[in-house]
Length: 248
Image 1 (cartoon, rainbow, N blue to C red):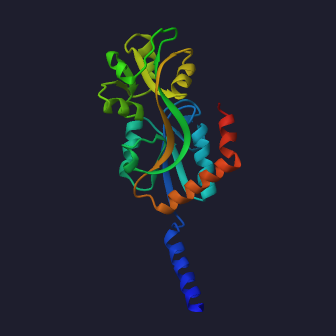
Image 2: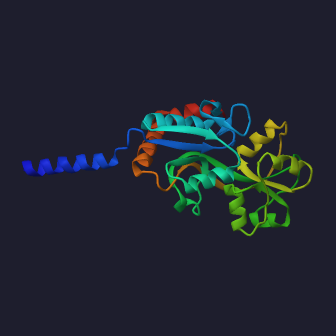
Image 3: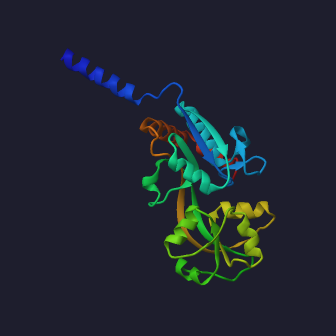
């Protein structure tokens, strides 16, 4: 019996040793301007560490603190570049990343951090209403390049007019360069409000989505486990709700 206990203890120690991270382990985290979830305090396209604010930025900071994992955080532009960087480099993470079945095998996932909806917006006062996404193919649709919304439209046979910044679609919509703006709710309306535009018409809500922290495939499973455990704890003790109340 004693031999069995000793053997079990040794096995547990071996598993723990394998799961331990190096003392100097550090993750590189990347994000973009995607208010109110993550954004530069000064509104610019570059920021670092505590000059980055937003619902998910605060959630991720607290998550890493509880998981006792060191990290650096940078906000950069454009999304396409940082998305591909995390695909190609180990020990890097990206948020707020919309989970889709197509993206699932590309990353390791921690979340969800928050929920959103995908919408088609028209100018304020527009009488247009659609009952299906297919009907939108009759119109010029603007989207954000390489964003999950744009990728979804392309998978459905659309050829969206993509912009490098989602904010550019506000001007295009008001100038009649596009008929509809495919974006995320509440992000799109929040961006429009920052530009002094309110009351945009929701023509169609065509998907509900969840935002995650997407980690490079080479990230140790121990990192994923610790972070997910910390996030689950934050949901249980009310930390997530407290953060969201500060922004919404």
